[in-house]
Image 1 (tube, rainbow, N blue to C red):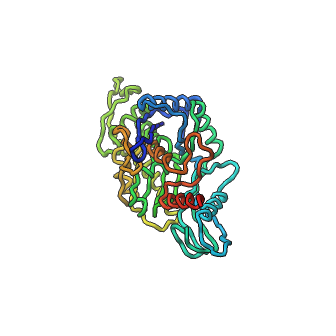
Image 2 (cartoon, rainbow, N blue to C red):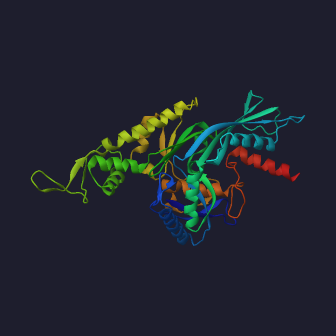
Image 3 (tube, rainbow, N blue to C red):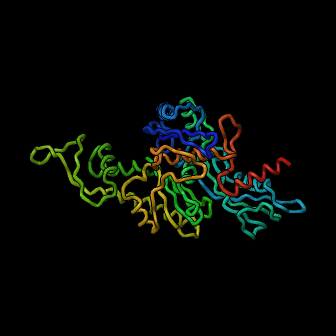
Length: 400
């Protein structure tokens, strides 16, 4: 697991990232806490290491969540404008969004995010920002992400037992998107993959909104296990070979010190040859075929203009090349990019492993998000451009 500590410093625009740390993800598997005590110890170790490097203490954390306990859907909310002038106000927009929220809630689910995708006036006219326009009916289509209540409670208990409070749980994919996708990619249509150890999150962004997201129970550790099984090697050796060679076509000579084998003449076999690619590509093809099927099934009707791979698992050598072929599009590795709300960041954190953690810092710096000591967090994702304008309008309206 990874953490990053940041601060908003006087005279500097945006967030200054002070330090980060990464430790083994003990007690958490596939985005679920499987051992609260082990998870708490890992959280405490990671935060304390980052605190020491930053020279600062923290008490509250933004919790990036992932895993197949998350569910996403597209919901529609409708609001009737009964006033004589029929002019749509920011409050009308908020009412429509909250009606979309209500359509996806149940007792066992917790709402994480509602991201508007577009608005429809009187059932006919599609617009991106309806404020100031006139209509009798205002509909909104929204991307909705919910978490399993029990799973989220367990994760938050692990954080609490480590000595910290949770300011807000955040879908890690949205935090990563803020940091690695360019405005052009978000506008024209792009797939983002956040590849962890046990799971992979992917989302399709288009016209500056998220249209689709999914969680897959496959990560870089899955490929390590494939290699270990295929070579009859230890997991440690398989991981070392995977990192060193990636999706290479060449034959590699390796030795598994943990599991020496006897040859037919009774001598110990010190090394073996193998092509790692033949062990890895079946899994890669299977997973990204699922992605293609999910995008097709969603009926988005839009071409994919690119793919961005981030997270620790994105560093598998040659993965971007294979993904580009499988999805028939350009693909690149996503690292932290220049961002108007990112003032400074240590060079050692400019790697995919830290993208989500740093993205959470940007997320937390936006107006409307929960801050330590605040009350209920806002459900609206204020990082969306027109929502920032909506927030300004709402504040102006409230002050009159």
